[in-house]
Amino acid sequence: MGLVVALPGAAAAQRIELDGRYWIPDVSAEAKIEGGALPGTTFDFERDLGISREPLADLRLSVFTGPNSKLRLAHTRGDYEGDTILGRTIQFNGSVFRAATRVVSELDMHYARLGWIWQLPLIPGKLKVGPVVEAKAFVVEATLRAPATTPPLRETETHAVVIPSAGLALDLSPHKVVDLFAEVSGLTLGDVGHVVDAEAGVRITLIKFLTITGGYRFFEVRGEEGSSFARLRLSGPFVGATFRF
Image (cartoon, rainbow, N blue to C red; front, side):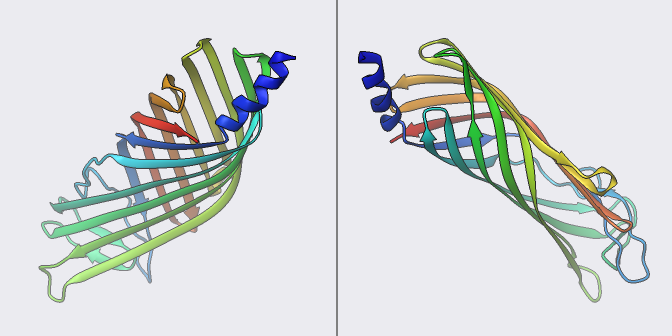
């Protein structure tokens, strides 16, 4: 009876979680955007445009709907910039940016998720495994500018997509203050594109309402439309903290 009484109290104490992470990924991004009569050029944002590596902020709000389930809202924001002299000519969205031209580029990304996670306690207090069902919304805006040309060139392409996805979440607790976790979700649409989001790491509970987190995350999205396509891959370590209310 004591155990039955304690469980609702524990669940109520952890009804809401706010998770903030500092993600330091390597960036691999390429695109080919046709426009008008121009077929477009396949280019790499880092190699051709000098896009720099920047840390990302990842915020998550989880509301527990039961002892083994929760709703989660998450948002990741990325803002990358480059400033370089082109080593080759690039056709982008109907404009031609010629070799030896200074090009200033921007890559702005928003990645939002709303999902439900339910984990079956295979070993109560030790091991939980269950499905993840999410709606993923991804918006990316790429801008290329050549401010020194006459007239100055500027082209912007925006791509937005909302897709469902499914996956699996696992939690293993070898110690009462240590929790190992892994999660993967995604969807493939064949030649049209795909999205994959996977992470693994460790949580260490410092006090009842505060946990520190560390791990590694991989994210990739690719989409095609006609002969145009875009691909973004982010992978690297993260650290963070979780507050419970």
